[in-house]
Image (cartoon, rainbow, N blue to C red):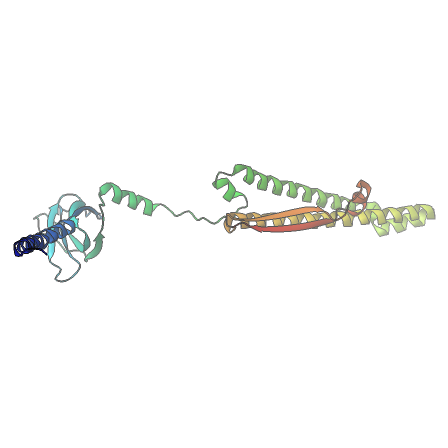
Length: 277
């Protein structure tokens, strides 16, 4: 057991420690709350003014004035503790008297906001915001530095346009050929032998099948171009990085070159969607 003298000494040390806590803890709290930050304000210049007067007050009641300062330029930099405040500004006339004050404007002080940071924020806010959406196929790839993908999209669309125009011109040549006009074939059949008329009708039938083939090819190429545009915009605008879509276009059945010339290309489209976790 401890003696009464030891207990008395312990109680005295405990009281001293309590007094230290009572006086030191509030001191550190005041020191932490008393930290000040730099804050910068800029306003529109008033022509003909002899300076400006700036007033700053607390946002919460009793809203006492914290700062009142006259400056020559349309800017000021001051120090305040963290918190919510309001400021107003008035231009000074030739006699140094303030004109009408601006309405109170609220602001918060949470960290240093010197002139350099404030001007950088103003410049960033003045720049037009660039939309992240892509409306031109391949432009999203090009903007992100994926130039090979962009060139592939543009080259593919250009190739489809070239092939589609070639099919259109070939069909127009067959349609404008006088030997495919039934009236001309009928006139030639009356003036020539029946064998010539039969040959012309057979040629017209062959040319018609070729014309139909060119029309089908135009439809396929146009659909492929539309799919390319749609999927390119989908990839560049909406598809998350962990998702992939693969589109394959291949002949429906093995074919020979002669069958392609006669009937065109029958295609089979395959769409694969992959989601990686």
